[in-house]
Amino acid sequence: MPVPSHEELERRRRVGINAETVADVTSTDFPGHWPGENHEWNLDHFSNTFKVQFHTNAHFDSSFSLIGLDASVANAFRRILLAEIPTLAIETVYMVQNTSIIQDEVLAHRLGLIPLKGDRKALNWLRWCKKATEDDPEGNTPTDYNTIILELKMKCEWQEGGLERAAAGETDPDKLYKNHSVYAKDMVWKPVGKQSEVFAADRPIEPVHPDLLIAKMRPGQRMDMSLHAVKGIGQDHAKFSPVATASYRLLPTIDILSPITGTDAKKFARCFPKGVISLQPLTSKDVESHPELEGKEGEVKAVVSDPMRDTVSRECLRHPEFKDKVKLGRVRDHFIFRVESTGQWDSDELFLESVRLLKVKCQRVKRGLDAMNR
Amino acid sequence: MEDASVNGGAEEAQQSEVDADRDRIRVLSGATDTAASFQFEGEDHTLGNVLRYIIMKNPDVEFCGYSIPHPSETKMNLRIQTYDGVNVYDVLEKGLDDLMDLCDVVINKFTIARDDFNARRGQTA
Image (cartoon, rainbow over all chains, first blue to last red; front, side, top):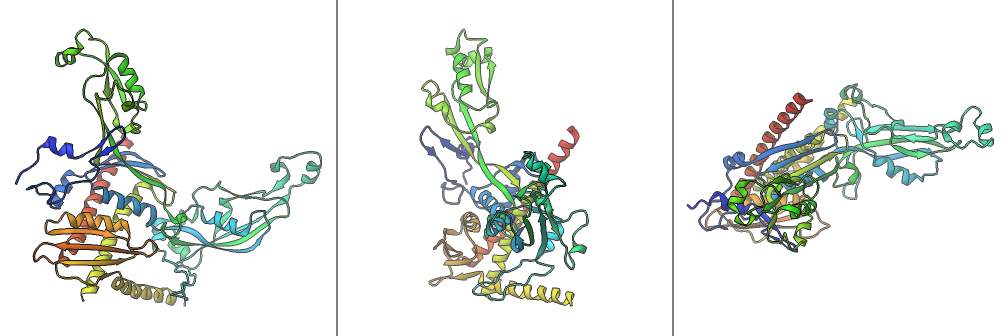
């Protein structure tokens, strides 16, 4: 069985980027594509070639490279991150009183979008709260194991002597009114039934950002409402999506085919974001391998130092002096992921959860297949 | 009383899960042992495209493709055709198993890389 050379394999990993077109976009690592070669799925081969590199890892933001995957797999992880990992969000608002200028439905929508956090283990324990639909008019009634209740009770009033100060021309609301701004931290969690046991005392349900402004009020205006938060997924409503964004891009490559030197090198570096191209002095070795550089020793040449920072603007291909000296591309199986959590999960945990969920989906289908064959 | 309702809910959930499994996948008409179209309920490009990829990696497979017949129905069709004498059900099952193995490898390697990264960052900080 023929085995392709290392160079050939590297060539196949590249997606070509030309001035106006792209080339070799689809992957070809399937049995039957290359005559005689074996491209059968092989777990050992995958675990030997698959690599993970971390770039940053923080609660709200993590970035890492997955190398050796097919786009379909990377895309499945991304799609699961966006739309299928469950989180908690406010779903129903029962308004007793709302005399603020924000209309009930607008306020309810705003409340729904506020990211909540809490004990992860307890959130896992929480069940789905199925809404009544046409097919299933029953639905679930809210109970302690499927609904979290928060309360929002605020009343704006004049401060002591505020009215006089206002008459005197004072306009700063901080000096005139009490409770004129309603913040996310004003929503208070009311544990029901088992919830006070299940949720760890130091990790209550609360908004991720306590200082998120919900509404502004003036004296006499009042809000009194009970907020029911349930578990849901992003597919149903974007407010349930656990990520602000989850995206990937392919690692850019820049191959300098023949040396770019002197003022050209400086111009070349300016075609890319800072840090992608560095300038280094020409060595005698360069001159030896490229006779056309005779006498240019000591001048600078362009060297690719960090292609990951490239945005692939293709600016360098617009200049005729670089056109034939550079080849742009991307690595087909090098995915630079960026996951930004909304706060309910850690960003790295989110990715792990997406992989676990893909596995769960497979198990579900397998069970369905068994049930069908029975 | 509170407890009873909690347990009742669990059993109910389990029963509906079993029912849901049965409705999750069906075979479209015209299927033979070596060529069949499966209809997945509640699945989309997420699973469709990975399954297509991993099944196409199987040398016994002549053709594999997926489609979403209508955008407002949560259904995904997957067509598999195999070479002589290879059963499509086995091929689909192998695809699912391979995909689960892949997930395990990704979880393993990702966890190791992350712990390494965190440890190294802890040292420099």
